[in-house]
Length: 391
Image (tube, one colour):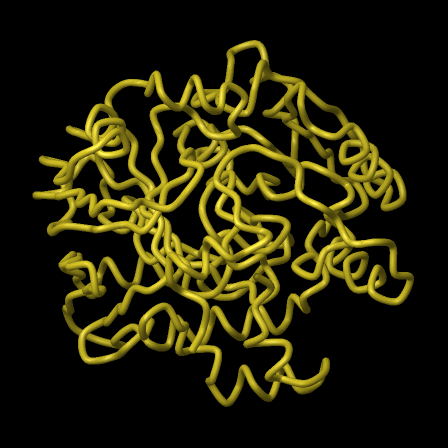
């Protein structure tokens, strides 16, 4: 059994859904080289690149220095622009002339993923790295920072192989609390999803138009609106999700809270109590912006701050509501995400794509794929690397 229950969360020393500083491991010379190797591979800056960092006032300045130093070492130029916060959903006009000169962008802003302007720059060939999970240089000392990137890529590709290769299918989510949620995938939707560099397991920012998460990886997403081809079209997203927890709440939910979707919109929130009221006030009328699945076996199992879990099989249902939540503004005034966003979290979901099982009660089936085990064996004990989740 893998840790996946509310009782497991409550026993965990690293469980976190609100902003508090984690404890970082002590410096280990040998282990540190793995983190450095990953950093240098992911940040595939080339001679002649112009690197632009989009930063915020709370980013560890050592992170900026690290990227600046790497850019200089590789014969690239560097500039940075500090926004008011990470919560920016659009690039300010005054930042655009700086950004347009870039060939390589490193960003803390939420706009990176959602602003059509940023998406358009990637279509023109800019390479982007989002550093939501690299806000403190001490993260280089963590197990997730040194988990082998090549093995991570194999895990992601193995998950991608679990999607049906041809034809339409339903992506279904269930759990013991009563979740009955599904997305009716067409083959065209599947093809758009899996064509992304993240689903190809390519976590190096060396391809024109790429979008990478560092520290790898956040997601990739089992669903995003872009799979529709036209994000203005309503997606076939329907059913009820009973989450175990959500970013912004100190503890997992004691009462059952069900968020109901109909034709790509949240139409009801079932449940009583303060948590249900907070979620109801935010998400009614909202839509699913992402449905991410963790893939890094050394990410802390129950650390869901700031944007959902990165541990294998941990899911986050990211919903954007119509208006900012007063509750989230009080609890997390400096949250890395905008206050219109809500990340609902599960660790025990069963997910099927057609007749293929992707998650079995929170266990990511691709961890036992022969190609994944073979890749992990090159770096150590596959069981330790793939299934010894830090809790």
